[in-house]
Image (cartoon, rainbow, N blue to C red; front, side):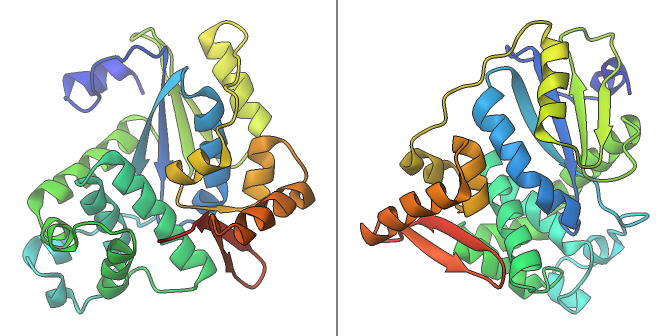
Length: 268
């Protein structure tokens, strides 16, 4: 798990100005990865001036069988459903920008765990791309491209080199290229990740002030009531009261599920 080995293989980009590099390995089909998303978002909002973030994919499939897409240029040849499709789709979205990839992964979690849609279906993945207003034609072309598969293989190579055997896993690197990364697998309280970051920085870390609600919805497409309450350190009741005001003013929309409420910026 030494960075020097990885850099020699042209996997990790050159060191950035922020002192910490954070790699988060996610699996699009993993419920724990969906659960860890609010924690990761809060970490970004409060402390991303201390670290650079890279989301990498670590599939739960034993051997990420890409044969289906490699041998068939068109996803239709694979009967439109395959367990590798969600990972490939995230990478295809990422080719339209890092933020597009993150938004796609977030929406994919929503479709899978809140809407109970089959995200291994090619048609559902295209629907997500349309919902996010990506360039759908480009998304479909990239889905079957060798470059997207190569990008996914890089993530799998990194997971192997960093000895990441499951998602979700955080791997922290400090500014010393010779040092091993600090690996944290599984779900822990937010304070654990704060403490790790502080120890690696070597001084007291100071959180940024949360952005205005309007700016928050520009950065993240949908957020739950609990997530918003945690970001602003207020009760869920207070968060819901403020969100209902925003709803009446037609600034936000509410999306209700069986046991979860999501909020998003009002679409014009």
